[in-house]
Image (tube, rainbow, N blue to C red; front, side):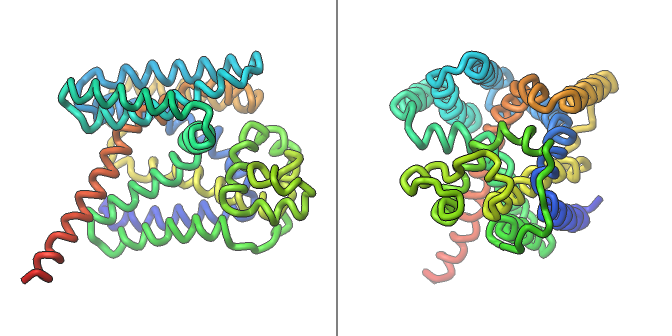
Length: 348
């Protein structure tokens, strides 16, 4: 399939993801997360492994594997034995992991690597427990930043490299779909969240509430929910059920439903380019078995599925960090390549 057709296909997938999420936001997210999510994790981890995770050296991915295991262990222990301190350290390790991804992707000299890793460790320690670490790295980085911001970066990089109408159109549609889901207020459209959505989405309500506050929706939500103004600036929902009944809560649900659904579909739509399927039959069989087992866990109990697949989910996020950093570096290079000729022309 040509790049132009893939771009057009992705525009269609963006619009379809948005349309479904606008009507049934939370159910769209939950279904995509449980069915498409595990297959995405497994195939991407396999693909990244075969490309040494876009790091400088063959075994550079080992530290990211260890960090994913440590973060998962801290998180699951804190859930089993409620301990806020453990959650705080898990968030700090996520911040450090982002720095590790940068180092492994872009720095080859061992002395510079050691210096960079030490600097990132100090930053993570000094920022431990801060709102930036807790919200932006602990909550947003492995969720909405991963599925929306990084996906947008890939779309932007593709548009800059291809320099085609369809590529630029896909970028504009992607941004427009995200903005529509977040800021267009079409009303509830008859939507009433199912009891299953109330139960299964409970794990994601903290992310939902912080997004509402950071997007400037806090005052409007507090005026309806009766939350105290000062508290509402950090978390505007007094009760988890308000996430599903407040109009602005539903709008955020539409954005999350769109972002996650398209994030997964984008990966699978580019199979012919990415080539994640070009592996041996034994690995494909293992991926299929693990995928079906994951769906079974979610079907049995959604929260159980989340617990068991936490490590796999985090691992694919952390292993992608070097690629994310290389993508942003590539965007910078492409933009500079456009600025330099313009400066030369102006100087002439």
